[in-house]
Length: 360
Image (cartoon, rainbow, N blue to C red; front, side):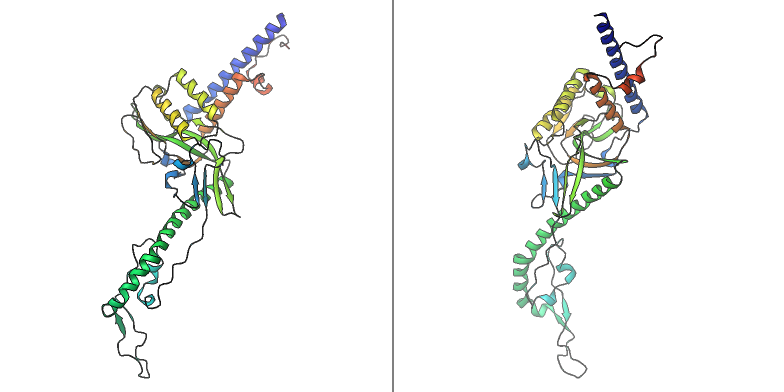
C-alpha cells in the first residue's frame, strides 16, 4: 500500500512539473513574440463577404446555409467560362467600338459619331464621294436597333460577366493561397478567422484582428475546376487568440475556463452562425470593458475606445509564428492535465535523479 501511495505521489509530482515546464515555455514564447495587432498585416486576407453570391460560390456564412454544423466544406468557388458578347444586328455592328462592346464593366456601349464609308470612292473612280458616314444622318434608323440590342442582349450579358469576373477574381486569390500552402507549408499557415475585434485598448494599442481562428486547408479539384476550403485533415480545433491583448483586458480565470470548454466542444465544426455569435458575445461580456457586438459579415468596423466585435469571417494566409507554438504548448498543457500517464520523454525532462532507485 505504501508503494502505491509513493507511486501516485511521484506521478502527481511529474504531472505538475510537466505542466509548469510547458507553461514556462508558453510564457517565454509570448514574451519574445512580435504581436500582430492588425489583420491587414498578414500576408493575404480574403474577406468572405467579398465572395459573390449566386451560381458558382458557396459559403457556410450565408444566411441560407446556416446550421450546417458538421459541414466539411466552409467555402467553395467554381471556375466558370467567359461568355461571348452577343452579336449585334449587322446594320448596327459597324457603329459599335469593339473595346466598348466587350467590356461588361461599362454602363452601355456608345454608338460611334462616325464610321468609314464602306462605299468610299476607290481609285477607279467608282463609289461614293463621302469618306465617312455620320451618326446624325442615320440616328433615326439606328437608335431603335441600338436600344433593343442593349436592353435585351448586351445588358444581361454584361451583368452575367461582371458576376463571372468577381468569381474569377476570388478563384484566383484562393488559388494563389493554395499554391503558397503547397509550396511553403512549413513556413506558412492558413486559418479561417471569425469574430473581428476592433478596439483602441486602454493601454493605447490599436487592434483590428480576429479573436477566433481555426486551421484551414484548401483543396483544388482540376477536373471540376473548383477550389474548396475546409478543416485540416488532422482536425485542428477552434482557437481563441488573445495575445494582442493585455492580461487585464481579457476574461478572468473562471470565465476563460468556461470559454475554453466551449471551444473544445465546437472543435472545427464552426458552421453554426448562432453558436459562433453566442460564443463571441460570451467573450465580450466576460471582459472588464463594456463592448458592442455587430451582427455583420462585413469587415468595415473601425477601432473605437470600446471593444467591438463583428463576425467578419476571413481566410488568412500568415507566417507560422510563435503564436502557433504558443497554441501547441496550450494543447500540450491540456493533454498533460488529463493524460493517464506522462510520456517518458517529458518525464525525463522534469525528473531529478535521486541517489536511490526511482519508484517503480
